[in-house]
Image 1 (spheres, rainbow, N blue to C red):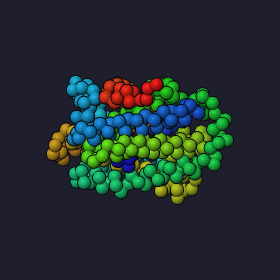
Image 2: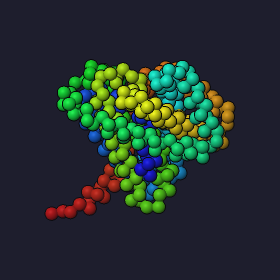
Image 3: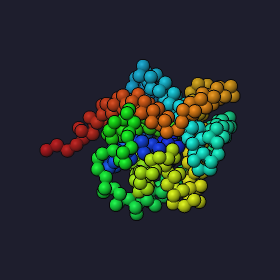
Image 4: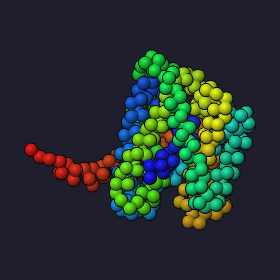
Length: 351
C-alpha cells in the first residue's frame, strides 16, 4: 500500500527535481519547513482516506469523493482530476523532450514522440501493461532519488547555514505561489488528489484497517524523505542547479558522467510511467472500453500542450490545479473530524 502511494505521486516533476526547486528550494531555509508540512499532510491524508476506502469498500475514487464532498462537489473534483491527469501527460512529454536535449543532445521533438509512443502502446495493452511498466521502473526511481540526496549531505551544511528566509540564490518563485506555506499547501492539494484517486481501489481491497493506516502513514513519510533528499541534493550543488530544466540530472552529471547518464534514464522512466498511468486513467474515465481513436486524440492534445515547455508547465499548471483542489483538502478535514474526531475526543481520559 505504501509503495503504491509513493509510486502514484513520484512522477517526473518529482524525480527531475523541478517540483522540489519550484515549491521548496526557492524559499531558502523556509523550504525545509515546507517539506515538513508536506510530509505531515501526505501522511495524514493518505492514512485517513485509505481507512475510509477500506471501511466503505469503494470501487472508484468517484465514490470516495461523493462520500466526503457530496454529489455536486464530487462532479467538480472529478473534472479537475481528469483535466489534471491529461495535463500531466503533456507535462511528461515536455519533460522528456527537455531531458533528451539536456543529457544527450537529441532533438526535443524526438524525446516527446518516443515517450508518447511508449505510453500509448502501454495503454493499448490495457491495465496489465500499465502495471508492468510501473513495476519495472518505479523502484529504480525511488532508489536513485534517495541516493543523490545522501550523496549531497557532505557539502550541504556549509551552504545551508549561510541561507536565511529570503529567496534562495535570487531565484524568484512563481507569482502564483509567493511564499513557502502557500507552496506547501498547494503541493499537498494537487498531489493528494491524484495519489488518493489512484490508490483508492487498492486501499478498498485491504483486509484489515491497520494496513490502510500504516500504508498511508509509511507512504507519506517515504514521500517526505524523498523530497528532503532531492532538496538536499539541489541545496548542496549551489545556484548553478537552478539554471537547468532537469536539476537532478544535472547534479548527477556533475557527480560523474556515468551517474548522469544513468539518472537521466531513471528520470525518463519516471516520465514514461507517469504519462502511461495518467493517460490510462483518463481513457478509463472517458470510456469503459477505450478505443484507439480516443487514445490518439488524447495523445495529440497532450503533444500540443507539451510544446509550451517543461519548466513553464510545472510553474503554471501545478499551482493552478493546486488552488482548485485546496477546497477539497478543507472539506476532507471537516469530514474526517466529524466522522472520527469527536469519537477520539470523547474517548480521551477525563479528570
